[in-house]
Amino acid sequence: MALNRFESLRVLLAGFGSIGKRHGDVLEKIGVKQLACVDPSEISRTQFTERFPEAPVYSDYVRALIEYKPDVVFLMTPTKLHIPMAIEAVTAGSHVFIEKPLSYTQDGAKELETLAREKNRKVMVGFCFRYHDALLAAKKRIEAGEIGRVISIRALMGEPFYQIHPEYMDMYYSKYSGAFDLVHDIDLAIWFANQDIKRVESVYGSFSEMGMQSPDTVEMLIEFEDRLVANVHLDFFQSPRRRTIDIIGWDGVVQIEFASWDHATLRVWRKAAPAWEEIPFETRRNDMFEAEDSEFLDHILEDTPVRLDIREGLKSVRAVEAVSRA
Image 1 (cartoon, one colour):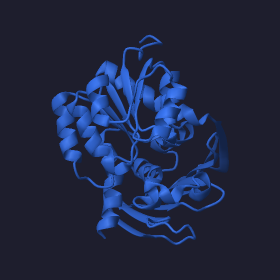
Image 2: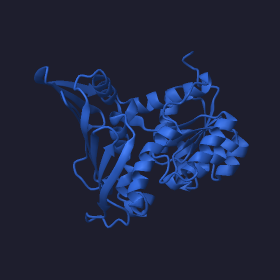
Image 3: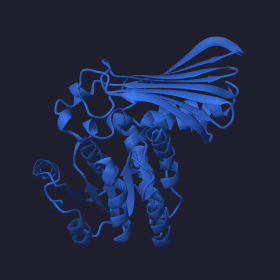
Image 4: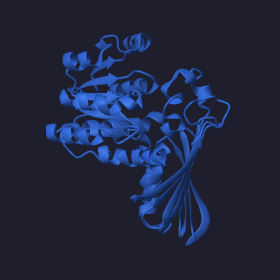
Protein backbone atom coordinates (compact mmCIF):
# COMPACT_ATOMS: atom_id res chain seq x y z
CA MET A 1 0.00 0.00 0.00
CA ALA A 2 1.11 3.62 -0.58
CA LEU A 3 2.88 5.52 2.19
CA ASN A 4 -0.10 7.91 2.45
CA ARG A 5 -2.53 5.01 2.75
CA PHE A 6 -4.27 6.37 5.86
CA GLU A 7 -5.10 9.87 4.58
CA SER A 8 -8.66 8.90 3.57
CA LEU A 9 -9.60 7.79 7.11
CA ARG A 10 -11.55 10.10 9.40
CA VAL A 11 -10.30 9.45 12.94
CA LEU A 12 -11.91 10.70 16.16
CA LEU A 13 -9.82 10.85 19.33
CA ALA A 14 -12.15 10.32 22.29
CA GLY A 15 -10.11 11.71 25.18
CA PHE A 16 -7.09 13.99 24.87
CA GLY A 17 -5.20 13.27 28.05
CA SER A 18 -1.60 12.02 27.99
CA ILE A 19 -2.37 8.84 26.02
CA GLY A 20 -4.73 10.73 23.69
CA LYS A 21 -1.95 13.21 22.91
CA ARG A 22 0.42 10.34 22.20
CA HIS A 23 -1.96 8.63 19.79
CA GLY A 24 -2.71 11.97 18.14
CA ASP A 25 0.98 12.56 17.45
CA VAL A 26 1.47 8.98 16.28
CA LEU A 27 -1.53 9.03 13.95
CA GLU A 28 -0.33 12.23 12.35
CA LYS A 29 3.17 10.73 12.02
CA ILE A 30 1.93 7.63 10.18
CA GLY A 31 -0.11 9.68 7.72
CA VAL A 32 -3.58 10.27 9.13
CA LYS A 33 -4.72 13.63 7.72
CA GLN A 34 -8.26 13.86 9.13
CA LEU A 35 -8.30 14.06 12.92
CA ALA A 36 -10.96 15.28 15.31
CA CYS A 37 -11.25 15.25 19.09
CA VAL A 38 -13.97 14.95 21.69
CA ASP A 39 -13.30 15.64 25.36
CA PRO A 40 -15.51 17.10 28.12
CA SER A 41 -12.53 19.02 29.50
CA GLU A 42 -12.14 22.55 28.15
CA ILE A 43 -8.43 22.40 28.95
CA SER A 44 -7.99 19.23 26.88
CA ARG A 45 -9.99 20.68 23.99
CA THR A 46 -7.84 23.81 24.02
CA GLN A 47 -4.67 21.69 24.02
CA PHE A 48 -5.97 19.72 21.02
CA THR A 49 -6.77 22.91 19.11
CA GLU A 50 -3.32 24.29 19.86
CA ARG A 51 -1.79 21.09 18.48
CA PHE A 52 -4.22 20.64 15.53
CA PRO A 53 -5.66 24.12 14.85
CA GLU A 54 -7.69 23.15 11.76
CA ALA A 55 -9.24 19.99 13.22
CA PRO A 56 -12.84 19.76 14.53
CA VAL A 57 -13.26 19.55 18.29
CA TYR A 58 -16.31 18.54 20.33
CA SER A 59 -17.41 18.43 23.94
CA ASP A 60 -20.20 15.87 23.40
CA TYR A 61 -19.44 12.32 22.24
CA VAL A 62 -22.79 11.56 20.58
CA ARG A 63 -22.68 14.85 18.69
CA ALA A 64 -19.14 14.07 17.51
CA LEU A 65 -20.25 10.69 16.16
CA ILE A 66 -23.22 12.22 14.35
CA GLU A 67 -21.53 15.30 12.92
CA TYR A 68 -18.00 14.10 12.24
CA LYS A 69 -19.01 10.59 11.09
CA PRO A 70 -15.62 9.04 11.93
CA ASP A 71 -14.40 5.92 10.15
CA VAL A 72 -12.38 5.12 13.29
CA VAL A 73 -12.74 6.05 16.95
CA PHE A 74 -9.77 5.83 19.33
CA LEU A 75 -11.09 5.50 22.89
CA MET A 76 -8.76 6.92 25.56
CA THR A 77 -11.41 7.51 28.21
CA PRO A 78 -11.81 6.11 31.77
CA THR A 79 -11.95 2.32 31.67
CA LYS A 80 -15.53 2.04 32.92
CA LEU A 81 -16.69 3.95 29.82
CA HIS A 82 -14.86 1.84 27.23
CA ILE A 83 -17.48 -0.75 26.34
CA PRO A 84 -20.52 1.59 26.41
CA MET A 85 -18.69 4.13 24.24
CA ALA A 86 -17.43 1.41 21.89
CA ILE A 87 -20.99 0.13 21.44
CA GLU A 88 -22.12 3.66 20.56
CA ALA A 89 -19.30 4.03 18.04
CA VAL A 90 -19.91 0.68 16.35
CA THR A 91 -23.65 1.42 16.23
CA ALA A 92 -22.78 4.67 14.44
CA GLY A 93 -20.70 2.70 11.91
CA SER A 94 -17.17 3.30 13.21
CA HIS A 95 -14.29 0.92 13.78
CA VAL A 96 -12.94 1.19 17.33
CA PHE A 97 -9.52 1.12 18.98
CA ILE A 98 -9.80 0.77 22.78
CA GLU A 99 -6.79 1.76 24.85
CA LYS A 100 -6.03 -0.90 27.47
CA PRO A 101 -7.70 -2.34 29.45
CA LEU A 102 -10.84 -3.35 27.59
CA SER A 103 -12.91 -2.96 30.75
CA TYR A 104 -13.04 -3.73 34.48
CA THR A 105 -15.51 -6.57 33.91
CA GLN A 106 -16.85 -8.70 31.07
CA ASP A 107 -20.19 -6.88 31.22
CA GLY A 108 -21.21 -5.77 27.75
CA ALA A 109 -18.26 -7.41 25.98
CA LYS A 110 -20.41 -10.09 24.34
CA GLU A 111 -22.86 -7.45 23.12
CA LEU A 112 -19.99 -5.42 21.66
CA GLU A 113 -18.49 -8.47 19.96
CA THR A 114 -21.83 -9.48 18.44
CA LEU A 115 -22.58 -5.95 17.26
CA ALA A 116 -19.13 -5.55 15.69
CA ARG A 117 -19.54 -8.84 13.85
CA GLU A 118 -23.03 -7.92 12.57
CA LYS A 119 -21.86 -4.51 11.35
CA ASN A 120 -18.50 -5.80 10.07
CA ARG A 121 -16.58 -3.32 12.22
CA LYS A 122 -13.09 -3.91 13.63
CA VAL A 123 -12.47 -3.57 17.37
CA MET A 124 -8.90 -3.69 18.73
CA VAL A 125 -7.56 -3.45 22.28
CA GLY A 126 -4.36 -1.44 22.69
CA PHE A 127 -1.65 -3.52 24.33
CA CYS A 128 1.30 -1.64 22.89
CA PHE A 129 4.00 -3.72 24.61
CA ARG A 130 3.15 -6.67 22.38
CA TYR A 131 4.76 -4.56 19.66
CA HIS A 132 7.98 -3.79 21.52
CA ASP A 133 11.06 -5.13 19.71
CA ALA A 134 12.66 -6.66 22.83
CA LEU A 135 9.49 -8.50 23.84
CA LEU A 136 8.88 -9.70 20.29
CA ALA A 137 12.47 -11.02 20.16
CA ALA A 138 11.93 -12.80 23.48
CA LYS A 139 8.70 -14.35 22.24
CA LYS A 140 10.45 -15.60 19.11
CA ARG A 141 13.28 -17.20 21.11
CA ILE A 142 10.82 -18.92 23.45
CA GLU A 143 8.63 -20.21 20.62
CA ALA A 144 11.75 -21.56 18.93
CA GLY A 145 12.20 -23.80 21.98
CA GLU A 146 15.48 -22.28 23.18
CA ILE A 147 14.55 -22.55 26.88
CA GLY A 148 12.38 -25.65 26.59
CA ARG A 149 8.94 -25.87 28.12
CA VAL A 150 8.04 -22.70 30.03
CA ILE A 151 7.29 -23.48 33.68
CA SER A 152 7.25 -20.15 35.50
CA ILE A 153 6.81 -16.47 34.62
CA ARG A 154 7.63 -13.56 36.93
CA ALA A 155 6.52 -10.07 35.92
CA LEU A 156 7.22 -6.95 37.97
CA MET A 157 6.04 -3.44 37.26
CA GLY A 158 6.20 -0.50 39.65
CA GLU A 159 6.28 3.25 39.26
CA PRO A 160 5.94 6.36 41.48
CA PHE A 161 2.50 7.33 40.21
CA TYR A 162 2.27 10.17 42.70
CA GLN A 163 5.35 11.78 41.14
CA ILE A 164 4.25 11.21 37.54
CA HIS A 165 0.77 12.58 38.28
CA PRO A 166 0.84 14.91 41.33
CA GLU A 167 -2.92 15.33 40.88
CA TYR A 168 -3.42 11.55 41.23
CA MET A 169 -5.98 11.80 44.04
CA ASP A 170 -8.36 13.55 41.62
CA MET A 171 -7.92 10.88 38.93
CA TYR A 172 -10.20 7.87 38.44
CA TYR A 173 -7.26 5.53 39.06
CA SER A 174 -7.29 6.49 42.75
CA LYS A 175 -10.94 5.53 43.14
CA TYR A 176 -11.36 2.57 40.81
CA SER A 177 -8.57 0.57 39.15
CA GLY A 178 -5.43 1.65 41.01
CA ALA A 179 -2.40 -0.53 40.27
CA PHE A 180 -4.63 -2.95 38.37
CA ASP A 181 -4.47 -0.38 35.58
CA LEU A 182 -0.89 -1.58 35.00
CA VAL A 183 -2.57 -4.42 33.14
CA HIS A 184 0.15 -4.56 30.45
CA ASP A 185 2.14 -6.90 32.67
CA ILE A 186 -0.80 -9.20 33.35
CA ASP A 187 -1.37 -9.33 29.60
CA LEU A 188 2.30 -10.05 28.91
CA ALA A 189 2.32 -12.94 31.40
CA ILE A 190 -0.73 -14.41 29.65
CA TRP A 191 0.82 -13.76 26.22
CA PHE A 192 4.07 -15.53 27.09
CA ALA A 193 2.23 -18.40 28.78
CA ASN A 194 0.10 -18.95 25.67
CA GLN A 195 -2.34 -21.09 27.69
CA ASP A 196 -5.79 -20.83 29.19
CA ILE A 197 -5.99 -19.70 32.80
CA LYS A 198 -6.98 -22.33 35.35
CA ARG A 199 -6.96 -20.32 38.60
CA VAL A 200 -6.09 -16.86 39.93
CA GLU A 201 -5.21 -15.86 43.49
CA SER A 202 -4.28 -12.39 44.70
CA VAL A 203 -3.46 -10.10 47.59
CA TYR A 204 -4.03 -6.40 46.92
CA GLY A 205 -4.78 -3.18 48.73
CA SER A 206 -3.73 0.35 49.60
CA PHE A 207 -0.51 -0.33 51.50
CA SER A 208 1.66 2.74 50.81
CA GLU A 209 1.46 6.33 52.05
CA MET A 210 -0.44 7.48 48.95
CA GLY A 211 -3.89 7.33 50.53
CA MET A 212 -5.69 5.92 47.50
CA GLN A 213 -9.10 4.24 47.81
CA SER A 214 -8.08 1.76 45.12
CA PRO A 215 -5.12 -0.66 45.41
CA ASP A 216 -1.63 0.77 45.16
CA THR A 217 -0.17 -2.76 45.44
CA VAL A 218 -1.19 -5.98 43.67
CA GLU A 219 0.29 -9.46 43.94
CA MET A 220 -1.27 -11.96 41.52
CA LEU A 221 -0.60 -15.67 41.16
CA ILE A 222 -1.94 -17.18 37.94
CA GLU A 223 -2.06 -20.94 37.39
CA PHE A 224 -2.40 -22.04 33.77
CA GLU A 225 -3.84 -25.29 32.49
CA ASP A 226 -0.62 -27.18 31.73
CA ARG A 227 1.98 -26.99 34.56
CA LEU A 228 2.75 -23.29 34.29
CA VAL A 229 2.44 -20.55 36.90
CA ALA A 230 2.92 -16.77 36.72
CA ASN A 231 3.52 -14.26 39.49
CA VAL A 232 2.67 -10.65 38.67
CA HIS A 233 3.63 -7.76 40.96
CA LEU A 234 2.16 -4.29 40.31
CA ASP A 235 2.56 -1.13 42.38
CA PHE A 236 1.97 2.61 42.13
CA PHE A 237 4.69 3.82 44.51
CA GLN A 238 8.02 2.21 43.53
CA SER A 239 10.88 4.55 42.75
CA PRO A 240 12.67 4.31 40.43
CA ARG A 241 10.22 3.00 37.86
CA ARG A 242 10.92 -0.65 37.01
CA ARG A 243 9.61 -3.27 34.59
CA THR A 244 11.14 -6.75 34.37
CA ILE A 245 9.86 -10.07 33.06
CA ASP A 246 11.48 -13.46 33.64
CA ILE A 247 10.34 -16.47 31.62
CA ILE A 248 11.79 -19.60 33.20
CA GLY A 249 11.88 -22.80 31.20
CA TRP A 250 13.21 -26.31 31.78
CA ASP A 251 16.23 -25.61 29.57
CA GLY A 252 16.93 -21.98 30.34
CA VAL A 253 15.75 -18.48 31.16
CA VAL A 254 14.69 -15.43 29.14
CA GLN A 255 14.71 -12.09 30.92
CA ILE A 256 13.61 -8.67 29.67
CA GLU A 257 14.48 -5.60 31.70
CA PHE A 258 13.43 -2.04 30.92
CA ALA A 259 15.91 0.53 32.20
CA SER A 260 13.77 3.26 30.65
CA TRP A 261 11.11 3.71 27.98
CA ASP A 262 13.86 3.84 25.35
CA HIS A 263 16.24 1.16 26.58
CA ALA A 264 15.55 -2.52 27.18
CA THR A 265 17.84 -5.51 27.59
CA LEU A 266 17.06 -9.07 26.55
CA ARG A 267 19.05 -11.76 28.36
CA VAL A 268 19.00 -15.45 27.47
CA TRP A 269 20.62 -18.34 29.37
CA ARG A 270 20.46 -21.89 28.03
CA LYS A 271 21.66 -25.22 29.37
CA ALA A 272 23.03 -25.95 25.92
CA ALA A 273 25.26 -22.85 26.10
CA PRO A 274 25.55 -21.98 29.80
CA ALA A 275 26.44 -18.32 29.65
CA TRP A 276 24.26 -15.21 29.60
CA GLU A 277 23.66 -13.77 26.16
CA GLU A 278 22.79 -10.08 26.45
CA ILE A 279 21.16 -8.03 23.69
CA PRO A 280 20.40 -4.30 24.14
CA PHE A 281 17.42 -2.70 22.42
CA GLU A 282 17.36 1.04 21.83
CA THR A 283 13.90 2.17 20.76
CA ARG A 284 11.75 5.26 20.90
CA ARG A 285 8.71 4.99 23.14
CA ASN A 286 6.44 5.78 20.21
CA ASP A 287 7.82 2.95 18.04
CA MET A 288 5.45 0.38 19.54
CA PHE A 289 2.51 2.79 19.27
CA GLU A 290 3.29 3.44 15.61
CA ALA A 291 3.40 -0.30 14.92
CA GLU A 292 0.18 -0.86 16.86
CA ASP A 293 -1.81 1.98 15.27
CA SER A 294 -0.54 1.17 11.76
CA GLU A 295 -1.55 -2.47 12.12
CA PHE A 296 -5.06 -1.53 13.22
CA LEU A 297 -5.62 0.92 10.39
CA ASP A 298 -4.23 -1.65 7.93
CA HIS A 299 -6.74 -4.19 9.27
CA ILE A 300 -9.48 -1.71 8.44
CA LEU A 301 -8.28 -0.88 4.93
CA GLU A 302 -7.46 -4.48 4.03
CA ASP A 303 -10.43 -6.03 5.88
CA THR A 304 -8.24 -8.54 7.71
CA PRO A 305 -8.87 -10.10 11.16
CA VAL A 306 -7.67 -8.16 14.21
CA ARG A 307 -5.16 -10.08 16.35
CA LEU A 308 -5.75 -8.13 19.56
CA ASP A 309 -9.51 -8.39 19.37
CA ILE A 310 -12.18 -8.37 22.09
CA ARG A 311 -11.61 -12.01 23.02
CA GLU A 312 -7.88 -11.42 23.42
CA GLY A 313 -8.50 -8.30 25.47
CA LEU A 314 -10.87 -10.22 27.74
CA LYS A 315 -8.14 -12.60 28.94
CA SER A 316 -6.61 -10.08 31.33
CA VAL A 317 -10.07 -8.75 32.24
CA ARG A 318 -11.11 -12.25 33.35
CA ALA A 319 -7.97 -12.60 35.46
CA VAL A 320 -8.66 -9.32 37.29
CA GLU A 321 -12.36 -10.14 37.58
CA ALA A 322 -11.54 -13.51 39.15
CA VAL A 323 -9.56 -11.65 41.78
CA SER A 324 -12.44 -9.24 42.42
CA ARG A 325 -14.93 -12.08 42.82
CA ALA A 326 -12.63 -13.81 45.29
